[in-house]
Length: 215
Image (cartoon, rainbow, N blue to C red; front, side, top):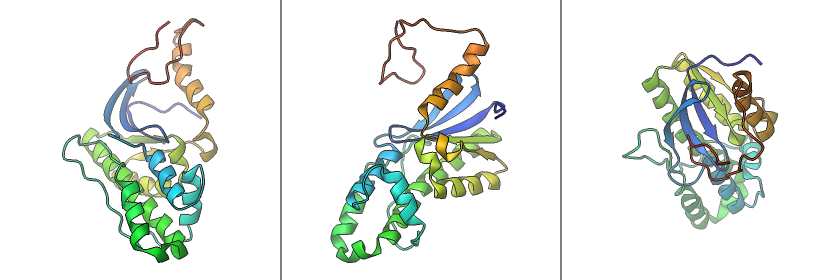
């Protein structure tokens, strides 16, 4: 694929990360917002566990939701007073657990439950991303990470971007969970620019955004 021209807004959605980043150039990124608690992929997994759908939960909910009504149940959408482009998903598991407790018959309408909870999570991602697009004025949006394979998210985000005159770009679903492809693409511009690191570079699983690993 041809390299995307800068600048663009990146939405990272996975089991470990949820954040919005302004990409101004290769290696020049600014974090505009991120989750304050659970990542959205983690919220999908926790919801799937409550519904008895197994792991990973995102694909299972995506499949089941296609048979349900996304407007059947109104699950809460988190609204943050501080951090304009931040996300919060930690209360979602509690809301779903309470709904299942108060509605014993919900087990007989799992497609509606799946579609409705998926819609709530997608709403939060789309609304915040649309606000960030309007604020930055960029013309391209990249949505990546495992949750970017979700069909409803791809459709809704494409519609929201188009309404703002923004091009929405997604990896092929098979590549959304391919970390090898991700890191290769991230390293390609550095390699082309002649940058390299020694084999003594340490692996740091909790490396902060914008930091470099130690040698």
